[in-house]
Length: 229
Image (tube, rainbow, N blue to C red; front, side, top):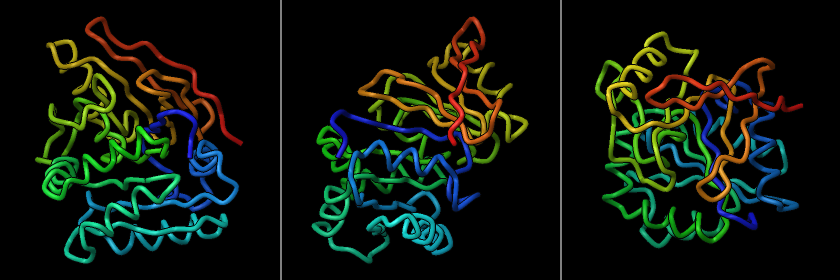
Protein backbone atom coordinates (compact mmCIF):
# COMPACT_ATOMS: atom_id res chain seq x y z
CA UNK A 1 0.00 0.00 0.00
CA UNK A 2 1.06 3.58 -0.60
CA UNK A 3 1.54 5.90 2.37
CA UNK A 4 -0.73 8.47 0.70
CA UNK A 5 -3.75 8.63 -1.57
CA UNK A 6 -2.39 7.99 -5.06
CA UNK A 7 -3.92 8.10 -8.54
CA UNK A 8 -2.08 7.74 -11.86
CA UNK A 9 -3.98 8.77 -15.01
CA UNK A 10 -2.38 7.53 -18.24
CA UNK A 11 -3.08 9.24 -21.56
CA UNK A 12 -2.44 6.12 -23.62
CA UNK A 13 -0.10 3.16 -23.82
CA UNK A 14 1.08 1.03 -20.93
CA UNK A 15 0.94 -2.76 -20.94
CA UNK A 16 -1.90 -2.88 -23.47
CA UNK A 17 0.49 -1.49 -26.08
CA UNK A 18 3.81 -2.75 -24.67
CA UNK A 19 3.99 -5.48 -21.99
CA UNK A 20 7.37 -4.10 -20.89
CA UNK A 21 6.22 -0.47 -20.60
CA UNK A 22 8.00 1.44 -17.83
CA UNK A 23 4.67 3.10 -16.99
CA UNK A 24 3.61 -0.16 -15.37
CA UNK A 25 6.87 -0.42 -13.45
CA UNK A 26 6.23 3.12 -12.19
CA UNK A 27 2.76 2.17 -10.93
CA UNK A 28 4.14 -0.82 -9.07
CA UNK A 29 6.93 1.22 -7.50
CA UNK A 30 4.37 3.61 -6.07
CA UNK A 31 2.81 0.80 -4.02
CA UNK A 32 5.99 0.42 -1.96
CA UNK A 33 5.30 -3.32 -1.76
CA UNK A 34 8.07 -5.89 -2.26
CA UNK A 35 5.65 -8.23 -4.07
CA UNK A 36 2.65 -6.11 -4.99
CA UNK A 37 -0.85 -7.46 -5.42
CA UNK A 38 -2.55 -5.96 -8.47
CA UNK A 39 -6.18 -6.13 -9.59
CA UNK A 40 -7.46 -5.33 -13.08
CA UNK A 41 -10.86 -3.90 -13.91
CA UNK A 42 -11.75 -4.29 -17.60
CA UNK A 43 -15.28 -2.92 -17.11
CA UNK A 44 -14.92 -0.26 -19.80
CA UNK A 45 -14.30 -2.94 -22.43
CA UNK A 46 -17.06 -5.28 -21.20
CA UNK A 47 -14.58 -7.41 -19.23
CA UNK A 48 -12.53 -8.02 -22.36
CA UNK A 49 -10.71 -11.36 -22.23
CA UNK A 50 -7.99 -9.92 -24.48
CA UNK A 51 -7.20 -7.03 -22.11
CA UNK A 52 -7.41 -9.25 -19.06
CA UNK A 53 -5.00 -11.85 -20.45
CA UNK A 54 -2.52 -9.12 -21.42
CA UNK A 55 -2.70 -7.68 -17.91
CA UNK A 56 -2.01 -11.02 -16.23
CA UNK A 57 0.86 -11.68 -18.64
CA UNK A 58 2.49 -8.23 -18.33
CA UNK A 59 2.19 -8.01 -14.55
CA UNK A 60 2.74 -11.70 -13.86
CA UNK A 61 6.11 -11.60 -15.59
CA UNK A 62 7.08 -8.86 -13.11
CA UNK A 63 6.44 -11.21 -10.20
CA UNK A 64 3.16 -9.52 -9.26
CA UNK A 65 0.31 -11.44 -7.62
CA UNK A 66 -2.49 -10.63 -10.09
CA UNK A 67 -6.26 -10.88 -10.05
CA UNK A 68 -9.09 -9.32 -12.04
CA UNK A 69 -12.54 -8.07 -11.11
CA UNK A 70 -15.24 -9.04 -13.64
CA UNK A 71 -18.63 -7.38 -13.08
CA UNK A 72 -20.81 -9.27 -15.54
CA UNK A 73 -22.12 -11.96 -13.20
CA UNK A 74 -18.88 -13.77 -12.47
CA UNK A 75 -18.32 -12.60 -8.88
CA UNK A 76 -20.46 -12.15 -5.79
CA UNK A 77 -20.45 -8.62 -4.29
CA UNK A 78 -18.25 -9.67 -1.37
CA UNK A 79 -15.70 -11.12 -3.79
CA UNK A 80 -15.58 -7.85 -5.75
CA UNK A 81 -14.92 -5.97 -2.54
CA UNK A 82 -12.29 -8.46 -1.38
CA UNK A 83 -10.34 -8.37 -4.63
CA UNK A 84 -10.24 -4.57 -4.76
CA UNK A 85 -9.46 -3.90 -1.11
CA UNK A 86 -6.96 -6.77 -1.01
CA UNK A 87 -4.80 -5.16 -3.72
CA UNK A 88 -1.90 -2.73 -3.56
CA UNK A 89 -2.69 -1.51 -7.09
CA UNK A 90 -6.00 -1.33 -8.94
CA UNK A 91 -5.57 -0.81 -12.68
CA UNK A 92 -8.54 0.22 -14.85
CA UNK A 93 -8.42 -0.58 -18.55
CA UNK A 94 -9.62 1.54 -21.46
CA UNK A 95 -12.90 1.49 -23.33
CA UNK A 96 -16.24 3.21 -22.80
CA UNK A 97 -16.07 5.71 -19.92
CA UNK A 98 -19.82 6.28 -19.67
CA UNK A 99 -20.59 2.56 -19.48
CA UNK A 100 -17.82 2.03 -16.92
CA UNK A 101 -19.25 4.68 -14.60
CA UNK A 102 -22.81 3.39 -14.92
CA UNK A 103 -21.83 -0.22 -14.19
CA UNK A 104 -19.61 0.72 -11.25
CA UNK A 105 -22.38 2.77 -9.67
CA UNK A 106 -24.89 -0.03 -10.16
CA UNK A 107 -22.63 -2.47 -8.31
CA UNK A 108 -21.29 -0.02 -5.71
CA UNK A 109 -17.75 -0.30 -7.08
CA UNK A 110 -17.36 3.48 -6.98
CA UNK A 111 -17.72 3.39 -3.20
CA UNK A 112 -15.29 0.48 -2.83
CA UNK A 113 -12.71 2.28 -4.97
CA UNK A 114 -12.97 5.41 -2.83
CA UNK A 115 -12.43 3.27 0.27
CA UNK A 116 -9.41 1.65 -1.38
CA UNK A 117 -7.95 5.03 -2.40
CA UNK A 118 -8.38 6.49 1.07
CA UNK A 119 -6.78 3.36 2.52
CA UNK A 120 -3.59 3.69 0.44
CA UNK A 121 -4.30 1.48 -2.58
CA UNK A 122 -2.73 2.95 -5.71
CA UNK A 123 -5.40 3.60 -8.35
CA UNK A 124 -4.46 3.92 -11.99
CA UNK A 125 -5.57 3.35 -15.51
CA UNK A 126 -5.39 4.29 -19.15
CA UNK A 127 -7.80 6.30 -21.31
CA UNK A 128 -11.23 5.57 -19.76
CA UNK A 129 -9.24 4.26 -16.80
CA UNK A 130 -7.70 7.72 -16.49
CA UNK A 131 -10.89 9.66 -17.23
CA UNK A 132 -12.95 8.04 -14.50
CA UNK A 133 -11.16 9.56 -11.48
CA UNK A 134 -11.91 13.18 -12.40
CA UNK A 135 -15.04 15.29 -12.09
CA UNK A 136 -15.23 15.52 -15.88
CA UNK A 137 -13.49 14.34 -19.05
CA UNK A 138 -13.67 14.11 -22.82
CA UNK A 139 -14.87 10.80 -24.19
CA UNK A 140 -15.85 9.02 -27.38
CA UNK A 141 -18.39 6.93 -25.45
CA UNK A 142 -21.20 8.37 -27.58
CA UNK A 143 -19.37 8.59 -30.92
CA UNK A 144 -17.62 11.93 -31.63
CA UNK A 145 -15.44 13.35 -28.85
CA UNK A 146 -17.78 14.94 -26.31
CA UNK A 147 -17.77 16.25 -22.73
CA UNK A 148 -18.78 14.01 -19.83
CA UNK A 149 -19.41 15.78 -16.53
CA UNK A 150 -20.29 13.02 -14.06
CA UNK A 151 -16.98 11.32 -13.26
CA UNK A 152 -16.17 9.90 -9.84
CA UNK A 153 -14.75 13.22 -8.68
CA UNK A 154 -11.86 11.80 -6.68
CA UNK A 155 -9.78 14.43 -8.49
CA UNK A 156 -11.01 17.96 -9.26
CA UNK A 157 -11.36 19.28 -12.78
CA UNK A 158 -11.26 17.41 -16.06
CA UNK A 159 -8.98 15.08 -18.02
CA UNK A 160 -8.30 14.46 -21.70
CA UNK A 161 -6.37 11.32 -22.74
CA UNK A 162 -4.81 10.58 -26.16
CA UNK A 163 -3.96 14.26 -26.56
CA UNK A 164 -1.67 13.60 -29.50
CA UNK A 165 -2.96 10.17 -30.49
CA UNK A 166 -6.42 11.04 -31.83
CA UNK A 167 -6.78 14.11 -34.07
CA UNK A 168 -9.99 15.50 -32.55
CA UNK A 169 -9.00 15.24 -28.88
CA UNK A 170 -6.84 18.35 -28.60
CA UNK A 171 -8.97 20.87 -30.52
CA UNK A 172 -12.18 19.61 -28.93
CA UNK A 173 -10.85 19.76 -25.37
CA UNK A 174 -9.31 23.21 -25.72
CA UNK A 175 -12.51 24.52 -27.31
CA UNK A 176 -14.72 23.02 -24.60
CA UNK A 177 -12.58 24.49 -21.81
CA UNK A 178 -12.50 27.89 -23.52
CA UNK A 179 -16.32 27.76 -23.66
CA UNK A 180 -16.66 27.04 -19.94
CA UNK A 181 -16.05 23.31 -19.48
CA UNK A 182 -14.11 22.45 -16.34
CA UNK A 183 -10.37 23.17 -16.76
CA UNK A 184 -8.00 20.32 -16.17
CA UNK A 185 -5.21 18.15 -17.51
CA UNK A 186 -4.31 16.51 -20.81
CA UNK A 187 -1.84 13.71 -21.42
CA UNK A 188 -0.26 12.55 -24.65
CA UNK A 189 0.03 8.83 -25.36
CA UNK A 190 2.78 7.32 -23.24
CA UNK A 191 2.41 10.02 -20.57
CA UNK A 192 1.00 9.60 -17.07
CA UNK A 193 -0.03 12.12 -14.42
CA UNK A 194 0.77 11.15 -10.82
CA UNK A 195 -1.52 12.70 -8.22
CA UNK A 196 -0.73 12.64 -4.50
CA UNK A 197 -3.99 13.33 -2.75
CA UNK A 198 -5.67 15.73 -5.17
CA UNK A 199 -2.51 17.57 -6.19
CA UNK A 200 -0.37 16.80 -9.24
CA UNK A 201 2.96 15.38 -8.06
CA UNK A 202 4.59 14.96 -11.47
CA UNK A 203 4.16 13.90 -15.07
CA UNK A 204 6.14 10.91 -16.33
CA UNK A 205 6.55 9.46 -19.80
CA UNK A 206 7.68 6.30 -21.52
CA UNK A 207 8.18 8.30 -24.74
CA UNK A 208 11.01 10.87 -24.54
CA UNK A 209 9.81 14.33 -25.49
CA UNK A 210 6.13 13.62 -24.84
CA UNK A 211 4.23 15.95 -22.54
CA UNK A 212 1.26 16.64 -20.36
CA UNK A 213 -0.63 19.92 -20.28
CA UNK A 214 -2.62 22.09 -17.93
CA UNK A 215 -5.59 23.42 -19.91
CA UNK A 216 -7.74 26.34 -18.79
CA UNK A 217 -9.75 29.11 -20.41
CA UNK A 218 -6.52 30.89 -21.31
CA UNK A 219 -5.16 27.92 -23.29
CA UNK A 220 -2.50 25.26 -22.74
CA UNK A 221 0.45 25.26 -20.38
CA UNK A 222 2.88 22.43 -21.28
CA UNK A 223 4.33 20.39 -18.43
CA UNK A 224 7.67 18.65 -18.76
CA UNK A 225 7.41 14.93 -18.14
CA UNK A 226 10.17 12.93 -16.49
CA UNK A 227 11.32 10.16 -18.82
CA UNK A 228 11.11 6.71 -17.24
CA UNK A 229 13.93 4.25 -17.85
